[in-house]
Image 1 (cartoon, rainbow, N blue to C red):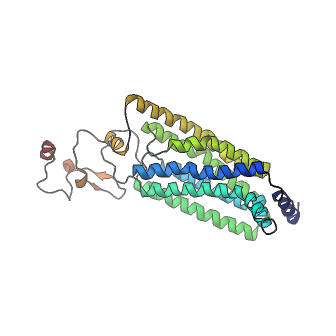
Image 2 (cartoon, helix red, strand yellow):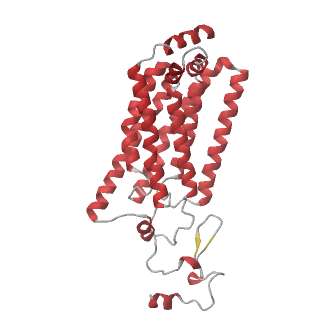
Image 3 (cartoon, rainbow, N blue to C red):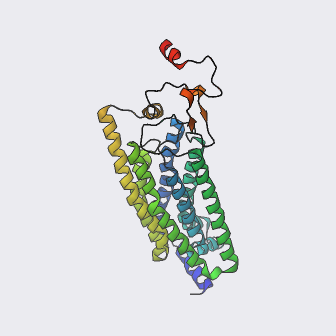
Length: 319
């Protein structure tokens, strides 16, 4: 099909929007935005991103970037954008809701990446009695760097194809969609493993998953109705993520119910206390950290900043 004929057919479809699909798309768009707010709030309110796997953040951000780029370079989406010059504003708005949905999802997850860095626990208490290896500040910075590099590469490659090989934009959209699907398939495994090792959800929001798990299937159906089989690489991503997020949700609810049954409330302070060695009574103000933010414990807790007359046993006895 020639480009002009293809655009004309897309414009005809935009001029006869399905009000049922339009209403559903608006609800999904608002739902995507609202669903991420509990996660943003939980990290901010707890003052820590403890319990969130950095690899979950890495895979989620790169998957979202690939999915957003995929729908932007998809010929059907580009035709819809071109139709906005000839159709009414309402019809244009209705036709671009699919792009807006993926864009909002990417933006909201990017905020999680930002909050993950801002509230990353850089001074965990050591030594640890847990077998779960705690991520370091260097790992968090590495995740942010890889997300930035991936985003820049996707922009550069998409721009190059758009100017030099416009006929291959459909193929590029499928490649980006497959990349997004592949990353989404493994995105939740690091988080599932981290949550399993910790035995609690930490700063991961259960309300977010309660909203998003069924919403993923509704969203996939809406995109499938809008893009058809040609957009399988886009809406298929949300089918996969819905299944895996459902597994994480079940695990998180189980740990929460177990914690309530035993009367354990794992807030940041309580979680940190579980990671302390009870045989040591080191004061945080006398602990120094290395380049990765890990606490250096040596000479019975003495460091270069420790006062010469500092006696932890006497301080403990007075308290």
